[in-house]
Length: 222
View (cartoon, rainbow, N blue to C red):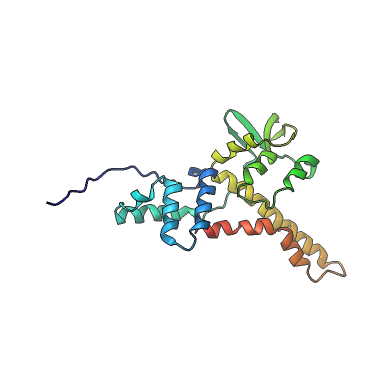
């Protein structure tokens, strides 16, 4: 007697870009990608699970055509991380603003930022955002002022995990571009001076090591 296989219909929601992926999903995906980086099948399973919510046991039952189509759609945007800084963002009824003037950042905020080993999208990123983005108190046109920095609280950082990745990449690559511009400016200035240290380039690169290391996130995603 032949046993009939019961087919179950499921709905697969595939995001079109990073605006459909939260930081929480992204961080969980990165952990699994690092864990299974030598196993392509496991990495695909992690991608489908964290981005589309498809359990591995369900993934193995998908038609090949469906699997290929979904995978192709995911990979079509995962390499696109060309986003701009969003200076303000509203969620949970509160409007937050990016530090208006980094050069005049309070010493306490600056000190707390230096405590993190990297300035990158990792487990420390929500805490970094809690320092850089604070509730807007006054706003006039494009100008605004934000609340005084009084230190970050663990429970306050959780909200950033549910913000989408287009926002996070915009903030991260703002600092990436800033670091590159500053490094280039310093090198150009030193060229006009005598006694340039022969290892100045490596010194600058080491200073931005945290940012450069996080560029590998794109490669990991691929």
